[in-house]
Length: 77
Image (cartoon, rainbow, N blue to C red; front, side):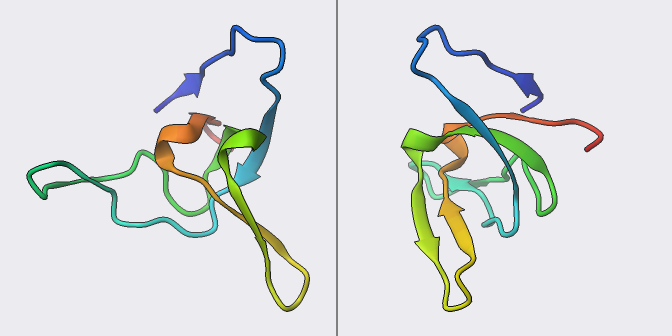
């Protein structure tokens, strides 16, 4: 995933964030794992309406976002 996809709708507001944790990848219907296009430390663009927000005991906010809801990755960030 490189570059940034743009939204056709004016309501699409993109935010930026840094990946702090990532899983192994996505599993297909045959059980094969396909690696993610992002790694810890990558700066990514995402839509706020496609996430789950959590706050830890120290009041730090984190977001759970599916890799399919990432709009792009900033190269050389």
